[in-house]
Length: 125
Image 1 (tube, rainbow, N blue to C red):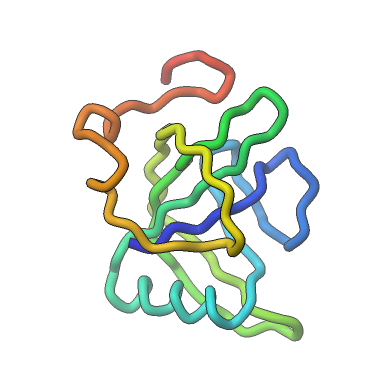
Image 2 (spheres, rainbow, N blue to C red):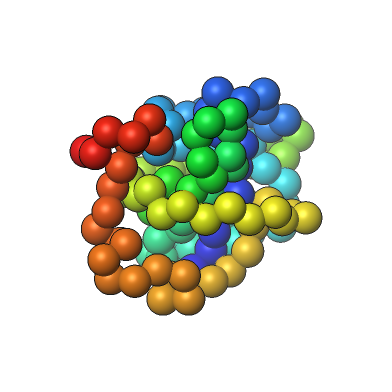
């Protein structure tokens, strides 16, 4: 499963990422390698997991799982749009050199974690 590693919605954005809320991202601006991985996920109907980096008191987490709606070439890079979000709050603080990686969810979550959804401010949903 493809995992994308993004800055939190409230953090300064290097790329033109469009967040819906603290758990769901509507679209990202990216480069060709990530666009191709997203296109492959779209064509295979494989979900993608979105990591939100730590920001101030909001912990780093795998914040949602979604599907890729489209991958479109733009003047400088690619726009990847997402849909069918499932909010998650699996705390996982990683330091990556690149903005993506591949992992099987069973490598880092138990069946109990998968259904746990929490607000980043401490209120259960």
